[in-house]
Image 1: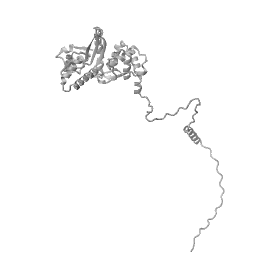
Image 2: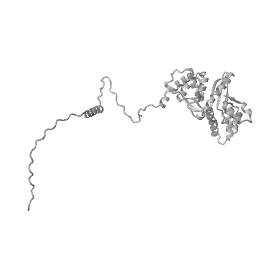
Image 3: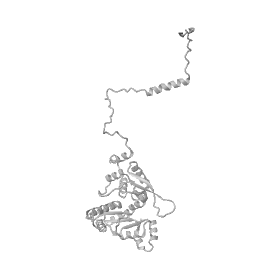
Image 4: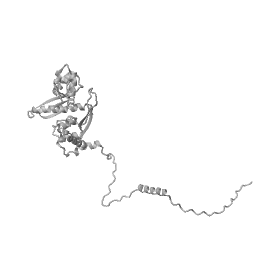
Length: 336
């Protein structure tokens, strides 16, 4: 048997290693890269805090179960905290009156505020409104005036409303009766012009009431009146479920001294309550703001209700065209 044995490989000649070349100097670009890498390492390296021996180390806050982590206060939370911050805020007499009047009527135009509170000093009113806005107490909005079929350019009017914080401050700083309800926020922008005219009508009625000896004037807007009437109807129906609804409405109308016409309780835009004979008795006047959108049947119901009806010069002209056959209705509509 032949065995193939591996042959010995020839030994190679021993070679001496070539001398290594001297290291090359780094180029300017490479040096720049090395410097940037070193700086990055320094930034990422953990920093050593030097603790002062004279002050105890503050322990880290642990998130305990049931404990809410601290949140950043947003604008709404800051606004809610304003009443506590402005309790000692010095308000000028005109600023207090602005808060009180706007709170009573919900929305008033800047034109009416300038006339009734500032004696038409527009610049002074604007400074006060700017201050009240910065404190988060009022809001000034530009809204579209009513169209009512009018052509041409849409008119814009400026109206003022209270914020919730402003309503709270008005309650604290004004001398209004405790039963006077205050409002905040612009609820119906499309009806802002109509609602702002309530204040204009009130001023004319208030002057007449004070001339005949009325004092301690309070205002109830239709929001409040409707709410009270609905609560009274609901309570009567709950007490006597089988009672006729028309009879219940008549009773509630009498309870609130409101007219019952055409199977419905007529509710004015506002009721002005006041004291007479040094507070020995109370009385009231109901006011209604008529617009060009009113239909003849609606106008007759308001006239029959005996409300003190007011309308602007434009609305009076439009209403006159609708009720040409009944001029007596126009005689009872007062101009704003």
